[in-house]
Length: 235
Image 1 (cartoon, rainbow, N blue to C red):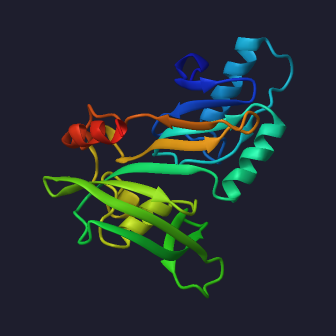
Image 2 (image 1 turned 90 degrees about the vertical axis):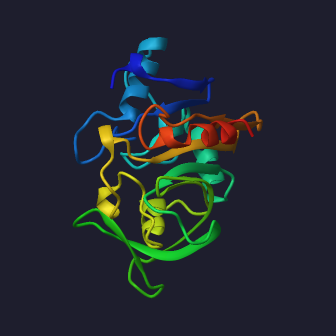
C-alpha cells in the first residue's frame, strides 16, 4: 500500500495510530507482500524528510485478513513502554465479529489451550499438557442476530495467534468469511472480524488513549448489523 493511502487516527512525536486495511499484512512476512509497517515507515520518511533507516516499533499484531486499529511506536522508548503495558494487560482490545451461526449462550467467557501448527499456519484447540500449548481467554457478547448470523463484541484477555477465530470455531460459530476455520465464503472478501476499539496509556504523557473505527458496513455481512454497530460506537 502507498503511504498516501494511510488512514491516520492519531500521530505525535512518540506514537502513530492507523487503520490497518483488511488483507494487508501488519508487518513483513514470508509472503513478501507490502505491509502496513512498511507503509508507515515510508510515510514517516517522506513526511519528515528523515535520512537513512526510519525507526518504527511493532507493538502488537493483527491477522492479515483482520482490519482495524493499530498503534506503532516512533521511538524505542515508546516501544519499550507500550510493549510492557501490553504484557501487563494495560491494553484494552475489542473486536466486532459476525459469526456464521448464533451461539447458544448469548454471553460467555471462553477459555482454551491452543497451539499453532507451523506447517500449515493453523491453530488448534489442545490440552494443557500438549507441547507448545498456550492459554487463551476471551469474553464475547451477542449484540445482534439476523439471517442465521450473529454480531458479537469480543474482548481479549490474551493475545494469541488466530485466537478469536479458533475459539469461536470451537463452539461451532466460525467467523463469517473465515474459510480456514470453517466459516462460509464472504462476498468481496469481507472477512467479518474487525478490531474496532483500542485503548492504552500513552507511553510518555500517560494520557488515557482510546480509538474507535467502524468496520466496512457497506459490505455483507456487516451491512446486516449497521444499526447495532452504530450504537456500539456511540457508547
